[in-house]
Length: 88
Image 1 (cartoon, rainbow, N blue to C red):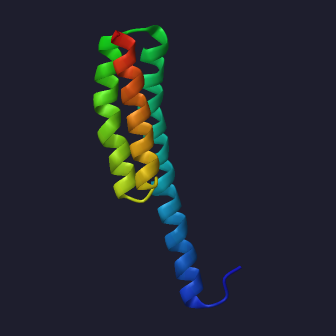
Image 2 (cartoon, one colour):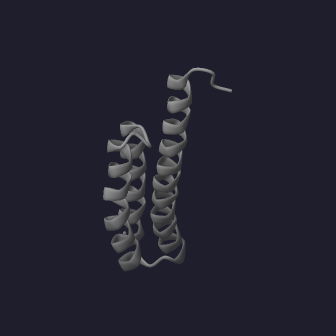
């Protein structure tokens, strides 16, 4: 347990950031799951619409430090490739 006042404050800050980051990560996973479900169903229109919403959400998470920038870019790239391949 934290002993100094600064360590106690740091623990409180970490707890708040953890809650915010957990919410953001969950939000990203939800949007990515919607794209995955549309791809599994073979619905190109729904997949494109879900991807258009998921892409900025992934990049927003990267900007806020929830995901690494390259991780977000990789996920966007792979999803885009799969959405594009669905129509071919």
